[in-house]
Length: 158
Ligand code: HEC
Image (cartoon, rainbow, N blue to C red; front, side):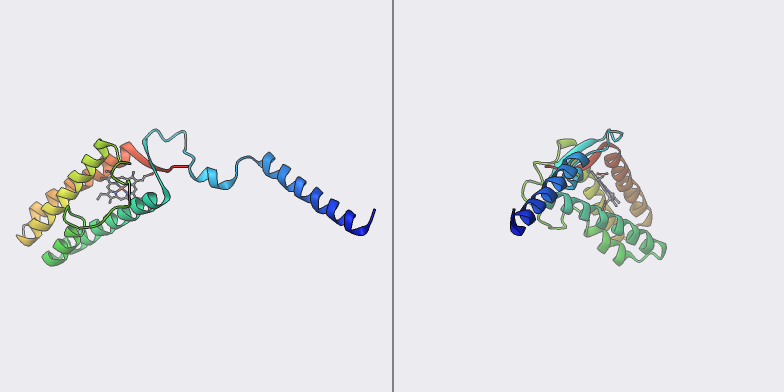
């Protein structure tokens, strides 16, 4: 056998060995990304990568807005409250990724809508410098955060 033939056989053996190792180890890592924890009984929203990224980004900005509203409320900075709240309200004017609406069960959409309406109320209450109305609407919005998080989770569709 020539040296070149020996080298080819060695490379093939290594490749077969690597493949066997991967098969033995189980599924490739990309599949695990879409996997779910069986202990988590919440309903899954199956989303593609773009929708998944979009919704979680929206969530993080909701949390930021709640924090900004709380901070501004402590010094009754009505302009800052109204600004943070209208950025999360029904008239915030953003375009969701294609198929986002259809991916959401009706109850999920309603909860989201109800929460957005509370941010409208916060913005209007801040414009009227009505602190109590700001607090009431913020409490209602937080109730929607909790209700939805108890019921739903997101999952990448394979
Ligand atoms: C209509 C449903 C719904 C509402 C209302 C809602 N969320 Fe979420 N949120 C979700 C879902 C679904 C997830 C993903 C949870 C999971 O898969 O574990 C999530 C995740 C998050 C995350 C984690 C983001 C990340 O990057 O992982 C934050 C923070 C968050 N939400 C904040 C909020 C806040 C604050 C509010 C209210 C002002 C709110 N959400 C209202 C459905 C909702």
